[in-house]
Image 1 (cartoon, rainbow, N blue to C red):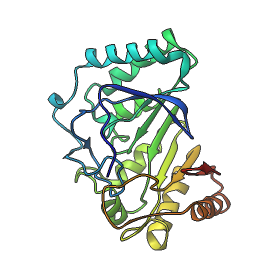
Image 2: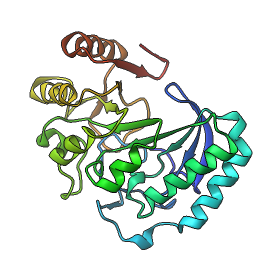
Image 3: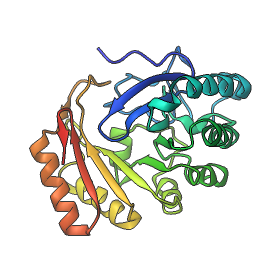
Image 4: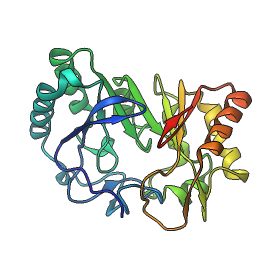
Length: 258
């Protein structure tokens, strides 16, 4: 069984290996998944509404969102390390995303200035100037790159037709402090061997992020045939990328990281 969707605007705080204690922000609907990807490994299952430009009326009003986030910060601001935009799909799809992030930064500065801002994004909107400018406001812009070629992108991430790999790469090049996260899988489709792996490595080398975070599928996934990459293989890939490309890379799995 895949995980239940997040309910409401805020959730947690939750603890993670990468961000410590984090208050999650869900700008997306809580009764279905809305995303520009339909990844085969997604812990929330299939994407019910796949779109790069969804209708604005699918989203909560900005004032409602900000009231909920302010309450969350008042309740948990002294117990968290990060406020993290993630939720039930791709957070940057909200039509008021730039205004919401700017307002949340102001709330953070006023209520809990030691807390940092993070985002988990699939990178499909990073080429859009308003989104790219907003990503610069995050302390940890954690952006997805699972594929370095269109064929692997189509097989693993199953994007909306309007989402193009060249737009993703060009957009990410302009994100300051870029952190790349990559989900590595094996099975019917894979990005850990052959041309797909070499294309992924080439994309990382081109992007030169400040950090790369790799992990695999420790939770239930959307599709059968997706095989988890074991920790030993993740560690080997991390060492290879570090030696081959000179990049900072960390491997994570359910019981630890390297």
